[in-house]
Each structure stands twice: as C-alpha cells, then as structure tokens.
Image 1 (cartoon, rainbow, N blue to C red):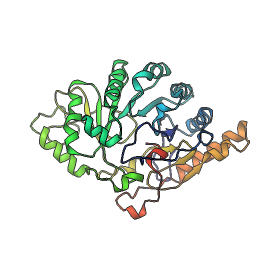
Image 2: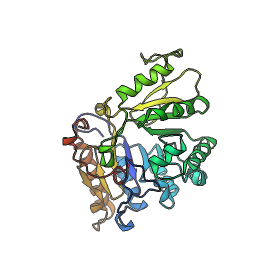
Image 3: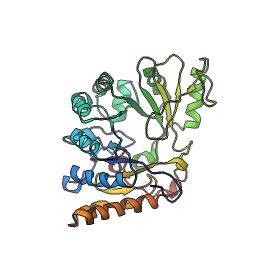
Image 4: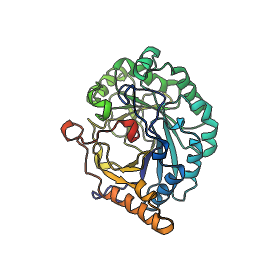
Length: 336
C-alpha cells in the first residue's frame, strides 16, 4: 500500500513490551512507570494486526521493545508471525543480554536477523551509558548469533568518538554490520549530546582514507567502499573497508534525512499505530481489538486502522526544529 506521498509502506516495527533490563541514559529515566500487562497487546492480538497488515502490503516485521527478550516466549510470537501468509521476514532488535540463552529458540522460530544495540566496547563506558555491567553477556550474545548463522547488525548510537574505532574494528574479523545511528531528539534523547553525522563521517574518512576502495558504487568517501549488498529493511547507507569481513553503515536521520524513502509504520506495545517518530499522531488499534468485534468485522476494523495510519503519514519529520516535535513518549514506550 502507498501512503499519500506515493511511498510504498511494506515494513512494520512492533514493540512487544515497554520494559527493559538496562537504563540507557538517552532512552529511559532511572525510574519509570511501566504499564500493567493488561494494557499490553497479547501475542494473539499482535498476530491479528499483522495478518491484516500483510493484506495491505506489509511484508517485513521487526520485533522491538523496550527489550523484547524480557517478555516471556518472544520466540513463540516470532514463529506465529512467520506463519502468516505474506510475511517474508521477521527480525529482532535486542540489547543482547538475554540473547545467548534464547538463541536456539529464536533460530528454531525462524528469526531472519538480529540487531544488537551496543554503543561502546569499553566496560566502564558501557556501565556509564546503560547503568549495568553486562557487556560480557552482550558479547556472548553476538557470538551466539554469529555461530547460529543469523545475520547480525550492531546498532551504535553516535555518542562519543572514542567508541567509534573499536566498534568499526569488529567488522575486520567478524561478518557483521556496525551501524552508527544519529541520536533522535525523542524523550530523554532531547537533551543528550551526540555526534552529528556530518561531523562523524568525515572523521572516520580521515582514519580509513588511506585504504583502497573496492568496486565503488557509486562515489563514496575516500577509502570506504559503497557496498552493493542489501542489508535489511531500513535506510542505512553501507560502506566496506577493504579487507574487512563486515560493513559499516550510517543511519543519519537528522543530517541525512531519508523521509522521501521511508517505508515503515510502528505498532507500540499498547496498540497504538504510529506513522512517524517525530509526531504524537496515529491510530489506537487496541480499541478495535477489544471492543467485542470478531470475524470479518474485527478484521475490517483493524485494516481500517492500518490504512488510516498509512494514509496519514506525514511527508517528513522536523527533528531539526525541536519546537515542532510533538512526540513526548520515551523511545522505550514507542519501540526503538
């Protein structure tokens, strides 16, 4: 299905919980008020939404949180969604802490790829950012996913330059992607410093610029080669450093605005359909799911919510103009 600006909307990010076992400073306050499980969509309700989403053209699903693996039987939901006709791929974003112990279940459920949020490889910095000493468990999760043959992406919010090179060097020995993400001015991130990508990319170029480019497509930063391979559902621009097994990518939502090609909608854990992170607009599909409808009437109501969400998608965000941002929830509540 196309939105009002002719963009094909085929990707949905689904938050299955607002809870998390970390307290990343740019994402969540130290103390948060979690909602009761009765306010969170059940797996069966999520599957109902996805069935109708597939009917309007959604083919790819990303499971997010909070931290999705803190919700019991997350792998069961992935298996349920994989069975829905029209859904081609289900992937997961996680902080990696519980990944190694759940990896086998996720693989059996048919997970298509795993994004692991990791902003630093320095233990002290990791504790400073997240509030916990769990870096070794995250590393174990990365190894478990790679050993299982699952495509792995590391999502690193661009916070400090001291963290950048060690993360890039992960791609030297490991066949994974490291993606640097501009900090979104949402929730706690509004007052948190980050590195803008119009500064970060030239800084990386200076350090890797002496390397020879490999099969460039098209022109790319000196010494970093544009990678032809499709890496996933989103807007990351990827480059490969010659001789490295993996790639690095940049998701530059602020200084590399990609709204003209945005292909996604979001479903929060409480059943709110969102078409853009920047604005507090959307459709409450939970109200339809729980108003006593069943059968064709229920499916029609859910589909109408999806169509309304897609057709009301704005042409662009306004993150550079903070006074125009109407979204007030934290990223953990929306779904990262």
